[in-house]
Image (cartoon, rainbow, N blue to C red; front, side, top):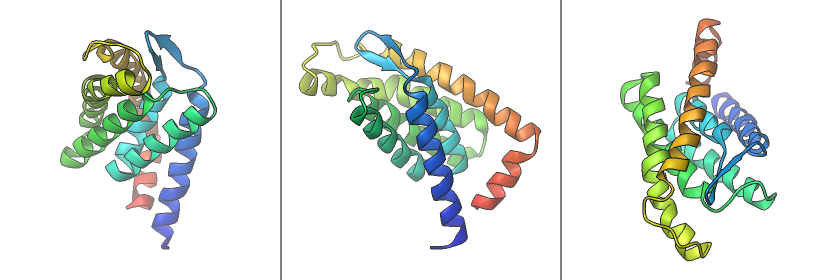
Length: 168
């Protein structure tokens, strides 16, 4: 394993821990527990580590949060689809705003629609196909907004550039 891979794994582990701890601060909206910290972490992972790491981290965060009782099964499709689209959008254009848009559309629309069969089949909650769009959009919009602040601060201080160089 090379030095770059180790740095990526360490950063991924730290961000998963932030998502798990931050997931204890969730707001229930309908059947969903809205956890904006997860969405902030998705954007940071998508920008700094890429779509593969972002999806893996979203899966691990969701799994750990479910195991400790701070998440629901809806966290899997919502966070994983958002993380994937965030990372892919950033990779396509290397613009921060593309990552934010990818996270919001990925989680808020596509992830919300993907959560519908999970709710109906696995959780036994009868819901309309678009029932999770509004709660997921609220959660991901807040998380993406926080990530704008975090990434802007990292960029202004030069940390983002140094961090990015160490991961490439």
